Amino acid sequence: MSRRWLFTLVVVCTLAIVPVPGQAANEVLEARIRATVEKIDAASNKQDLEALLVNYAPGFRSADGLTYEATRKAVAALWSKLSQPTYQTNVTAVVPQKNQVRVNATTFLNAGYKSDLGEPGKLESQVETSSLYEEQQGAFKLVSQRVLAERTKLSIGSNPPQVNLNLPEAVRVGRPFKIEAILPTSLQKSPALGGIRLSPITARSPGAVEAPALEPLRTGGLFKTGQAPQRPTDQAITLAIVRQGGLLLVNQRLKVTEGEPPKAATQPELAKPADEKPAAKSSDPAPDNQTSKPKTE
Image (tube, rainbow, N blue to C red; front, side, top):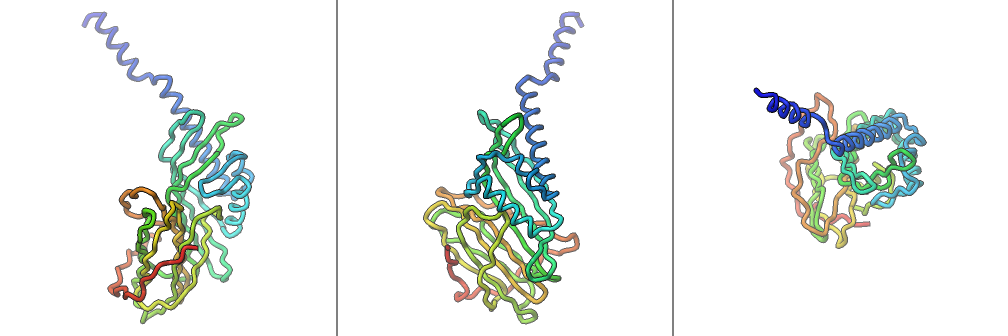
């Protein structure tokens, strides 16, 4: 091989392994964003409110209407109910946008819950967000946030009900949708109370849920048909089932879109005990008198 060809080969190989300046800058940017997200998780795990809010811009505002001060109050109210929380955020995308950075992530929360019933409680939550960060005074601050999907499950008691859920994640404005919560155990063996509530999402406590009115269940679960509002305002579907041994409360965001929503993927399952087996579907059909429209409050 001639010296000329050898020199060309060395140059080409060197160029192939040396990152371009833009690529290096993006890697540094992503590393800084991930470090900020890790600080947010660490502060949340310690329930250190001031350490958490250091990462928020004073002008922070969420798509649901939460401001910096409203966030302080909402998080403090939530943490007053939690014991030994474990937050884990998985960053899925870091995209520079002019003077800001868009960050897509999913946050998982598992914690003990201090209920007013005097029974042990467990809270599990999964929230998918799209956030904007901006560099302020040498550090990245969270300036805005939009929730893309969320589900919170609260179990209270020594043996809370086991339920198979079929809850929609998105619906077009004005369209009907179905809600199903199927109990695998016969009501003859163990009677149950249940209820469903549909309400618009506003500036509210993260993960907070308000129980719906309860009524005796006459079939193998809860079966309802709801109607999406005529405006693209996200709704909260809240269902509760009470049985001897405990209470199950589930809160899930329903995205209301002007266009046709994307086809729903398999709903993510919240953490389950390792020895828990999937529950079989109930063979009890839903009678016509169990189908109604939840009220939008």
